[in-house]
Image (cartoon, rainbow, N blue to C red; front, side, top):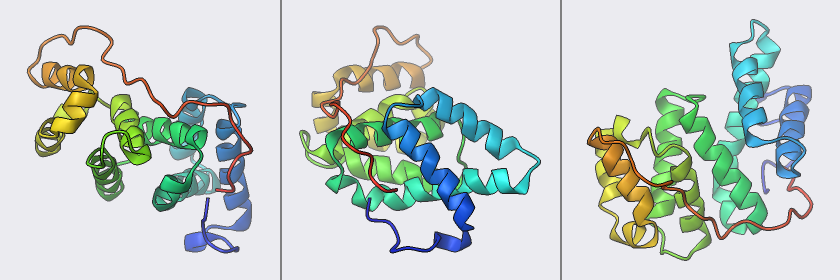
Length: 189
């Protein structure tokens, strides 16, 4: 990525920053699955150990800070970042102001032109937490109003509408991402 130019951001200790970066590298190189990272983050956040909580906070902070560099990411890393972004929302690993910012970034991305890298990122991230979208009625309405998103991913919006209306969504309703690819070397997060 293009993170801060050395030193630890926002007062995170360097060892905390290093551990957070190792977690990212493992997921970006395929050494760890998104689900495994989600499990690790749950454990870190729920830990009685203050340092573990700092590592969790640092991972969330770094992913959030990297968003502005996502348009420059190679497809594979953007794909993994979308899955991770969406998983943090889906698994309630972020809340309040942070959750609001992550949701805003996903909405901003799906408002981009269909076919763009950031649109693909947004659709894939949204797909990860599609069952929760109706939990935020205003957000849900904004997503459902995007005609180009409906054209590109009708199954996703149908799933969100069915969930909102209390119907059992039919079909997989899953976004096929054009961002897949073979992993190059990981970015320095």
